[in-house]
Length: 217
Ligand code: MD3
Ligand code: FE
Image (cartoon, rainbow, N blue to C red; front, side, top):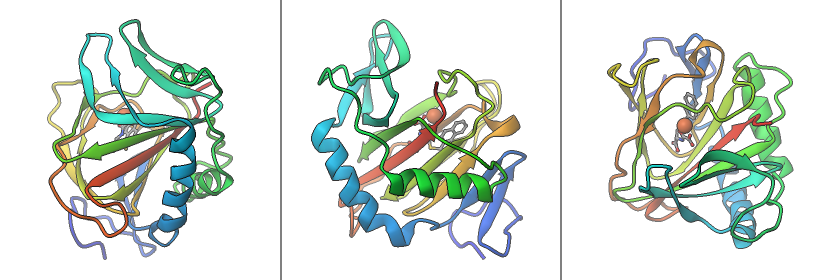
């Protein structure tokens, strides 16, 4: 049975929790691969480092981001979009490592989305106080494909909203190694992350890293 942060009385025997019609949380699913994932992330961020993006409204995002994949996510005064090249380096984004894409498609299949082949992976880094305001992910061409997310490092309170920004969100604790698959009718829900609390994680120190895999193009 899941322990902390449980909101829904729907734990399955494999430890997964269905949190919506198209959304499944697998607690600690990738915890045993986390060391290897973090090592691989260092190779990616050596090529395309974390950076703070600016929203079209001119606000600097507190979370810092980078990407890997055929497409990477970008924001600036001109808007949100996916690009084939990292605008900071002028080079293509680093490829999605095989380890990542296999773990993501295995999780998608376990949640009922077979043949998932993401072409973009957005990597978010949270430090104490960093947050992500309620938003929808709708910059992808076909929102029929799910999003798969990996949480690593410090725990964070995830906000699981409705289909209007004003719908009051539920709260869900996302911890190290958790995998969330989010598709079907839940794909366009508003969601966000509360300000990260201080802490020290044995593998990642004072930060949380979140990877979100998407089929963007
Ligand atoms: C629900 N990231 O990168 S991951 C994002 O923890 C983002 O960094 C959060 O929202 C984070 O866009 C949340 C879980 C998640 C990701 C995508 C979703 C939940 C989602 C797309 C639609 C609905
Ligand atoms: Fe999002």
